Amino acid sequence: MLVNGKHYQSIWRDLKTGAIYIIDQRWLPHEFITPVLSSTNDAMVAIRDMWVRGAPLIGVTAAYGMAIAMAEDPSDSNLQKAGKFLNSARPTAVNLEWAISKMQGLLAPLEVNKRATAALMLADQLAEEDVQTNMAIGKHGANLIADIARTKTHGEPVRILTHCNAGWLATVDRGTATAPIYEAHEQGIPIEVWVDETRPRNQGAALTTWELLHNNVPHTLIVDNAGGHLMQHGFVDICIVGSDRTTATGDVCNKIGTYLKALAAKDNGVPFYAALPKSTIDLTLFDGVREIPIENRSEKEVTHIQGLSENNKVINVRLCPENVTALNPAFDVTPRHLITGIITQDGVHRPDQLPSH
Image (cartoon, rainbow, N blue to C red; front, side):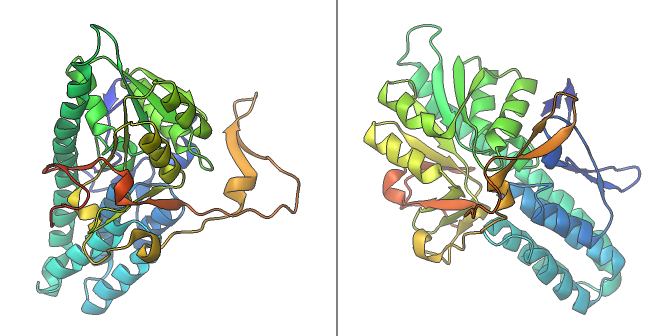
């Protein structure tokens, strides 16, 4: 997508130097920093500490981490060691394990001296597949938006609520939940996006607004608890969110607070969709609430907040008294009965009729 008029992906390989770059999302929207991943440890830290985030981007970053590992040491032992090391970074996003398993499965049969080149080619392939997948998700989701637009008076926007950042910053490009938004916008369909701030890390306020702003998509930032109020008064036409892991039965695990939006949508007759690649569907799980591991992150993410000071310095400030205990589950699970449909690269599905990989 565009940043100051220039096209960027969230991770890319410089074909001249071979360097693998990422956008360090910890500093957005105030600073645009693009570090190089130089080691397997760099890739693991980038995932663990949320330099990159979003299930599809985590998967592709892990794939490049495996490629770096094979350049360092292509032995059988390191193929397994690197995979285990990278997989320890974050527990909830299924694409992490999926990408590592795919890399290991394709690299293991190869001669050791061919693994480094093959790993890099495979990581490039997974990155490109992610872009094409998101383009397809965008077209299927935009059809839903177009259907709503046809019920509006001329020029009246379709009002879309999204939670967290399932945008191009959460993927290699285009996004999952934002892909239908970008596609509809490019088709000339009038839209207005309600962007949840998404506490505690404020991915909506910091990231979704940033990318929508750079791509000239009309949007309004709202506090997390405003969504239900807007739905009650008819100001939301459709909700589209992403997913970090979806069960075979259609339960959707996404950023904490998604479940409450789905409850409000159900109560007010607002269609609620999750947009995700098929790789995010965990076919081994059937009860999302009981089976999906939920990552608990640092208390400091809740007790402190990052922002820009009057001196244009990025700083962290405390929100509460010292010695306050905080709980910080990063995700929740929305049961399938609250979900209208799931948008994948293959189309729009009922939650209980998901496609296999």
